[in-house]
Length: 129
Image (cartoon, rainbow, N blue to C red):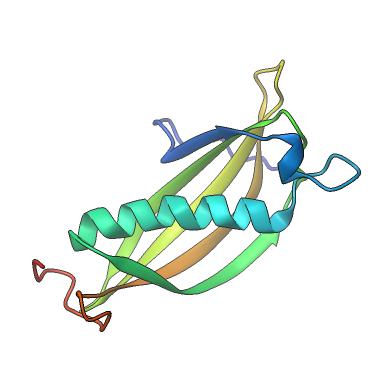
């Protein structure tokens, strides 16, 4: 268990886990969790780019704790760096058991997105499309 506390703000995404998101043992698939994190980072990237942005990399992911069917998962995403066409977004996922209040850090990673135009080629982040 992590000594960290969740951010004191609303998450970018909050969702309840369902049986379809889990393996035969009731543990949520890691890929499902990565997908939620990618969606949260994508929301931040698209807002900053004021248009389409695509994932080009994810690094530094480590799973700290499992997520179970029925857990509430809160995903927090923060823009940490903006380049010419790229953006780095730090993402954390936290779980809360369905009937409790204790929250636990599940995983974290850094996502890199690139702003793209209608031609799907990189464009400057500050350029309106």
